Image: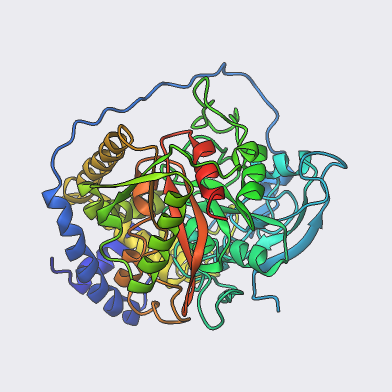
Length: 89
Length: 426
């Protein structure tokens, strides 16, 4: 498995994480090694999974949740009782 | 010596009476505590104060426990050494100069040093059992669905469980009794099947006569020589007390580490998407201009440490177009295979035994430069999470390099048998 720095940058964009050049370089080498190790999964036999799955349902009833004040308490920036994000450009 | 076991020291008094009255408990810092900072060992959540308690924290308070602090951990639970914390590494009270294991290293160090009577950790791929083994204490990873994850900050939610750490098997079992049981706020919790023994503490009677212990060759082969010698002495001890042992084979565990990391990283890439620096957590420190994606990416560059970035990126890669079938889907096959192997093994044995960790505690700093080597150290613990099974790590002895833990694995919801067998080793 070969990984180049363009692929690492592409994945970082998908994941919304900025990386500096040094991180890109280090991750490129490490990802190649780790992904090569993951290649062993190619030899796993097909298994008929027998999951004991059951839907868990509950009545859809209104319950007390966080207050607006509690929900906003940890936000870096708020305005008029709302979260404040970056401008949409 | 504090060993840097705590990120926050506090004192939350519980009810005046209850099964844990008079007992102090340290809580891993990825478990939400109402009004008390909860960072997950990450700069991204420095200053974050949850507006509610995790279900397990409510249960601790109702049981009369006193919470004495939030323990240091690998960032978001991602590590095997408790060196990836943004708040500095934890020292091992039982092996100077060596790591305490991870990711619940602060919880294990708090118990081993006596800073708390008991502790809560979380175990996604061994994060309770590994530090228990390295610090010479007891740790239990419960059956998936026995303990509520409500209020646990998610890393890989299909794998993780909150579990107890304690100086003795009986004390860990007492704490498990308080934590266990269904929770309407976590739909993955289940009532144990009818007829199953849930008096965990009472099961700590050391009676292993007639017990059949299987030893999977695959989990012993790669182990360090010193670790193996301690393990074999402990198995002899169980035999002298009336247990019989037999060798079993679990071929599927050979690809368990790969399956575990693909699944855990994939789930992490989704779960950690919530840390955008808008609703909580560190912001991107931009000028508010530009677009959302740039702002999020800046916040996450600042907030996340290297191991977290590595796992989120690899998880994103494994789920991306063209690679999903090759990695994620094959990892799910490997997971089903592991589960099937364990089910078959339990048709002929009551419990399985292995060294908890194939190696003694690493020297500090030793494994940080080589992530793959660190992942491979989880070989004996991750299969249990993939199979949703319960396991306990019990101190088995020491090598010159530190404590050695013995891991016992049981069928789903048979924690009582693990407690019984584990207590025979004390």
